[in-house]
Length: 141
Image 1 (cartoon, helix red, strand yellow):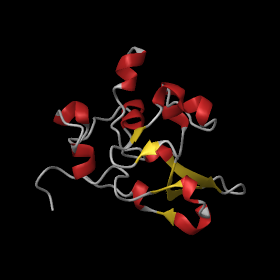
Image 2 (cartoon, rainbow, N blue to C red):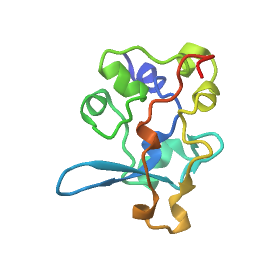
Image 3 (cartoon, rainbow, N blue to C red):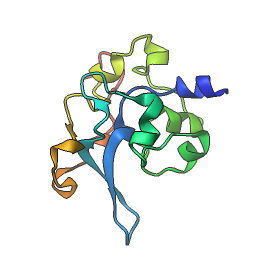
């Protein structure tokens, strides 16, 4: 798989843009409902993708190696699914043909997050929904 093909695996959920907290004693990761200041909340896309690593030094590019080892990638992440040899979900844009299905299936961060620039304490905004499996088959209740 070349770099462009790998990049096309991104489903646009923006869960990788969530601010995460790590317990230094246990290594456990806690997700918050706070996202990077560069994330466009309506589209769940980076507002300055080409320069994101310069503007946000802790922004990580999800590589195949990282996808195999990063315990913070949600179980719904396409990079992680492919690294684990699993199929993409029905709502993934490459399967559905639409970039909206990741949102309508409830997978993305759309309407669930606030920007980090709002000067809030991340420990007050820990959430569990990023790891909850959503987005069953179309028509499932």
